[in-house]
Image (cartoon, rainbow over all chains, first blue to last red; front, side, top):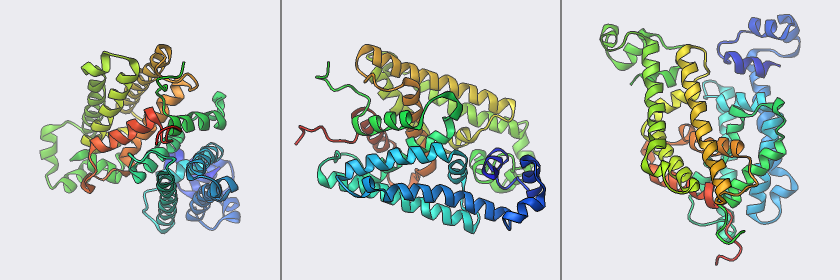
Length: 182
Length: 182
């Protein structure tokens, strides 16, 4: 698919010609479906961001304590990254050079704010520790989530569920064993 | 400096001509110091990796319980990222297309193994919870650390120390308040 080719060669460095060759189709076959390379990028970035925002609208993301909603959003985001790996990879490499990229960056910022707000709400509710800066914590949490595009290999038998479990354990319980646990 | 220019324009897309113009010097002034663009890249990547490995050789990284050594390596890495931001940014974008890049990727892998080993040791010692996969945990911890190059702005008054504290709090204690803390 196009996102995979963009990730391998870089979006800017990929012509529609390259794309057609890599996908084993003719250029006109691509133009039958999309009007331009920009349109392919836009679809890919929208797919990724729509899926991430869909997670934030799920029942468990909007009801219950903020800390549990945050847990749900983090796990759901891991699932989206694993499922839409090439699209999210493309999204995370976007630098905002064009209108389509700027729009994607704006949506990422909106998503970041939403996560930081959940951290803030959790602190106010007393479920999240108050010695962390909510914005920094949100950045770091999504640092963990986003790192998945760098190291996750779909064919190595590690499921999205297992990654989400380890991530949520670190994020909410931390790695250090409580002193009184045996 | 060169690393900053490479990050802005992409290493492949930057000629020595571009570099000289961006730095406000002549091409021959650059060639007076380095033999090639590759040499500039190598120096930058070495600077970043040398600093990261130096952290792992500090007293507090080699003595004491593994969980505390891991804490020290994480905090030290945050410091290195903030101090050498353009160099580490370049390092983290390397894809291994040339010998110099392949060498840097090998050193990154070696560093990752070292961190995963600390997690493993901490589990054996009983100080780190045993329900996490050490390799996945190591990846996620450095997902947090490495995300710094994406969002940290040196001029916004957030110190490396504050980032390191929030990161270590999440990594070792987790965000959720213990049930019996008031």
